[in-house]
Image 1 (cartoon, one colour):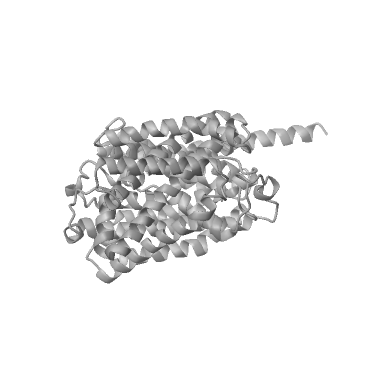
Image 2 (cartoon, one colour):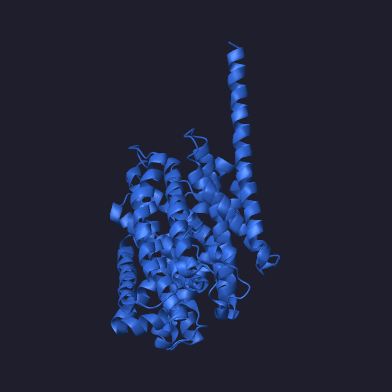
Length: 496
């Protein structure tokens, strides 16, 4: 438990000190924001700071810091370290700078930002990749809350789950089409209260129980061979499993929505960086609860099994620890998180397609024409999720890998932006996470069964090699760029 407390304190310190440094590197100023310059009453809508923070937090939270932390806890206390260091030095930096760059470029979506700094080929690739990820999010974040609601507000049958899935999907359609301040801007504060109640309640419970769960100094070896973790090395699998609680490319698709609603650039630090730190704390709470569940008899206490799925862990813990009313509020918070990410994921997909094809979104019919094909694709993915017994786990793996791959493109684009500003080697704040996540994703696809299935023992060496190559590529790019600039300067000097 001491590891858990120290981890929470580390996240708070990370926001106080490191976010201040990152903000100074970027340099927010008093220029007019897209929300003011492009106000259209649909997507560019100025909103109060507290409301923008709530929406950003719920946009990025989803099931990632909950389900990802539950599954990641099976790797033992290494999950704490990844959440803390990943959140402070990678995830929050990624969210802050991608959101601020979107504001600087008129509320541009992620593919546009990638295109500006990494070229049109990368932009086209990111357009496809982003849409695939957002459609996956729409499917995953419909299925998981539907399961929980089917258990709580139904008889637990597939019919009950399908009914709730249809209701959630209908809500997604409405929330995607209407102006952002009509539904999302009004109901998100209620969802946020439920989610924060869930986190605080579970934190109080785990502190009162003070279970004997693995500490960081006990060793970081994989502690879950009896939990179905055989053949899953900490590197790279942990860094794919826990995404949204540490770093998530999905967040960079969400930040532009709030970049279109912020009245001043100075809100970027509390909104973008602060929301990610808050999400990291939620992930830490669920990692601690899940460690008790898996390693210290928690499963038996709540009447569940070690093989329980992540949604089943949430339901059983909430009912057992918090009673009927508390359990309902907690489950409501857990249900609200993915739903509020699912609807904004589909909204982001609409905006990305509209921006790519320059389709005006002021009228409702163009919004419908863009949205309908996206919802059809998401519905097909949802059907696979439901019909296949292992559909959720399969889609989660692809979601996790695609999610982290998008973070790679975003981090390299941010690195190019910082490297071009001649501020010493401050670009290292994004280059090191970019190279590391590149190593994670390449190693994962080579080692995991969904890829090439190479021996797990080769993972560290592959990771080190990819990290060094990625770093070398950036240095080569900077050297060539400097040489080109020097040639231009010398040529201009000679011609005088």
